[in-house]
Image 1 (cartoon, rainbow, N blue to C red):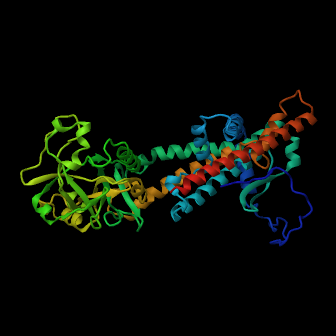
Image 2 (image 1 turned 180 degrees about the vertical axis):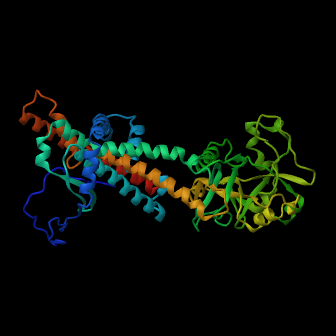
Image 3 (image 1 turned 120 degrees about the horizontal axis):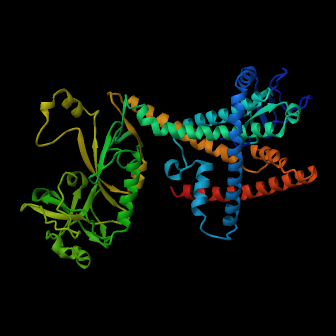
Length: 528
């Protein structure tokens, strides 16, 4: 992220600055010192100047629109800063939503998505997005200057202490001789270009399913493209598997996957009876004979690993569905069983015994209706998925007549997950695109493109907001300085004093607000 840009438009002094270790002694020398280093580029000077001069008429109109947008953003960001300062000083409540939006736009971090450690692919996407956003930002300044007949001296990429940044060096004397409107267009060009990049990325994300439709299917179920070894479902799912449903509810994309996980977790927390799970299964007597009797002490199961405690419940239907009786299920039958989740996932449900609808039990005479004993923080979810790249599914494609009526479609499988649903959902990396042709490698391309667009959107938003802040060393300082010249009722001395007051106050407020945001985000990240 471009955290520091400096005053771009100050003309560099003719005398060479003494540095600790100069890289080269040419006319355009790079600089290295104990706290600052940069790399200057001048090879694009002529091409950008020619482009700006050729399309000067249109570019002036283009950047004039950017002035209006940038000034509006400067006013809006300043208002939010004041609002956040009030919240920081605990003078009022109710700014949580504004704070969340403001912090997410600037930081571009979702604690639930990244956590404390970002995957390598996300780091690469962040670097690529940062390069794109910074390049477009600096090109805006250079093109705006070129359209006004000002040629840039160089583009510098620098690192000041630990803060990276970039700047465009222009002839400051020539810029001062131009009208104030010219300087304002140049100062606002970077923020305006970042806003345009945000709009372009948003449109690209919206049209991506249509653009990739000849090669990819979208919205027909999220495909697994990565899963950590520590994931609780790593023994079931593998790259290439497609999630079909959760608890019988169709899953169309990655957003449905996360939202369903959160919904199931909330339903468990809001359950009226936390001791007995509302899920029921018709268990045949042959399976019960193989099961082990569970020893329950203080609601703690003594079942072996990968086995869970079940209790038999009366199979009566809706006439036995009162809130009071639901709490008595544990003492109705003293038989407790330990059953494996793999065996239970293949069984049918007894019916909706806890609802007011007229739903009678569907278990046969040789089956017993069982419900799992609910443990704190544990969710029971049936996950149906398709394995198009499995050997059984490939064999079925070659010989469709080999499909068995007893075992169903071998491409579709179901497993019962018992545990923390949200953590499980986040441990699986998915994409909403499925390749139309049998190529697992091709499944990674839409995910990478989608992440680059989304990350570029976030980085560009952050750059636009940061460079609109009324603080020192960023574009907001130059924009504010040029804007104050339109207040003709002020003398130069008072105008300068007002500018310094705005910048000093804006810098202090920004530091306090950012400190509060980072502390809040750090606490959120430490919870994952």
